[in-house]
Image (cartoon, rainbow, N blue to C red):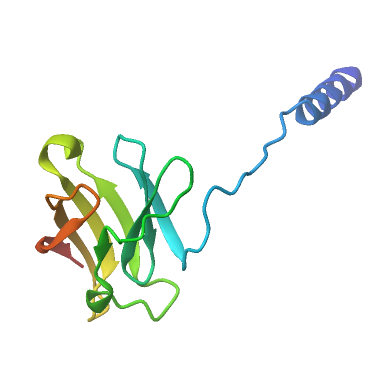
Length: 135
């Protein structure tokens, strides 16, 4: 039993040492409290910032100059657990342009809203906000 335990311990140590190393490469910077990163099925990455903005970077890491969405006036983000907290794209986003955001509204309640992309694929129609649920 002692030999079996030693063998298992040595094998586990060797397996741990043989694991591949993971390296990180910065592709973009200049964000303020990013909380989510999503892809809509194309080459863009959407970055949600806690204070209420959603930005886009391309595959080279270039940050687009205009925000996709800016709802800072609707978002309460004074504490670490409040603000724009999540972003998700509808499974048929390519055809319907819908995406969802979860944020703390100005009353401090958690809210999920649906937005629609505008005629510009890099910009949302702020007026298209449809409240899904408030908790």
